[in-house]
Image (cartoon, rainbow, N blue to C red; front, side, top):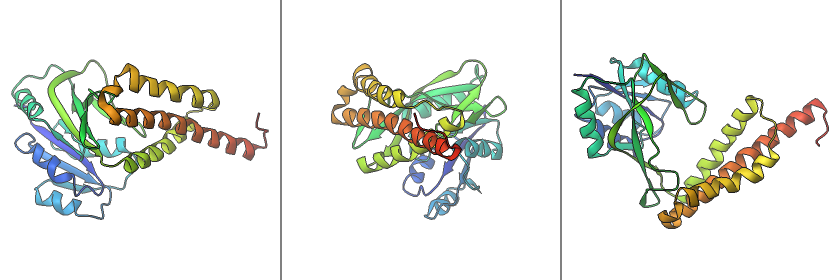
Length: 258
């Protein structure tokens, strides 16, 4: 049998954490929670479920996830976000996998997102494959914003969905886009990207077209329209904020703005 450590990173997740931990019952041989200074009941809830609880100041998501895997007792890691749970089919897939001889070092599964009262089946939000089951000695996370699992070779697949309860209100969606575009602009700037005007005006409508038309966002009704609209706005904001960083750099160096 493959022994499995489930890892979660948390910050003020008292409303989500019970659902996530309940989902892992009977599947995980160990649950590791790494918290970055929650001020709500997250720590209390985690300890009440008998998890291995650690505290670590937040640097970025990749670092937190890698630290959680390092704290685990088993080499096989299943990473679950606090705002997720496993579908019954995915739980059954993991049970079968635990009894098998793994063919891959990494496995992926689809993620289905609940948004403003409905499951989103299109709009580039599904199947949204997530690589969450892996051997920690053969894979690790990297990336400042959307941390990605880095490994060699191919990933296997498990049946079933991760059920994602992420954005509860449109205002929350707006705030999330505002936050991550700031960090994405900083990341582009640190990578040496300096051209932004054309991308700001061309990439944004293309993003909307991809989500709403090519990826059938219109089949998700008004929610698909909102998702596509916010994806386009996020693209526009990312390059707009990059432009501000570039202009600040030019002013500091005494260069004229073209």
